[in-house]
Length: 162
View 1 (cartoon, one colour):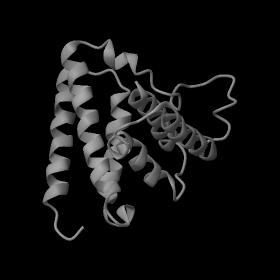
View 2: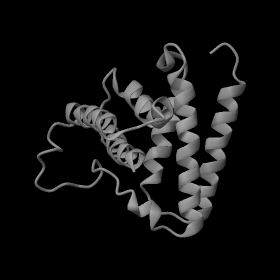
View 3: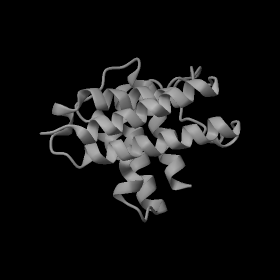
View 4: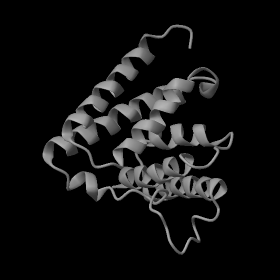
């Protein structure tokens, strides 16, 4: 699935951002990449590859040594999306719902003018939630995150003057 490929690389970029300073372009790329399937509903292979290449280029800009590392730590590696598909039903469903809600939030942010200047908490939340998806936790923790994502979306849609 094209969408899975994008999310996989995007989670790797978020991992890079945990230990390296972002560029002025990183936040807008994370928003665009997360919202990509909603921006381009007829996502094809060339378009998917284009955004993946863009994400990888940003990863290499932020942490150029990771790409050539002989002892990768795994923190900046692309996420293996089969881990979601192979998870217990409740966890898989929660993670998929979290991704869907995050994509909706990112799409809304993407459609705002100058999003990073006014939506710092929402953007930080995107990073937090994407990073969290990489982890193995009890299902209750993912249900809590899902509720938090839904609340972020509600809060965002209820804000005035964005």
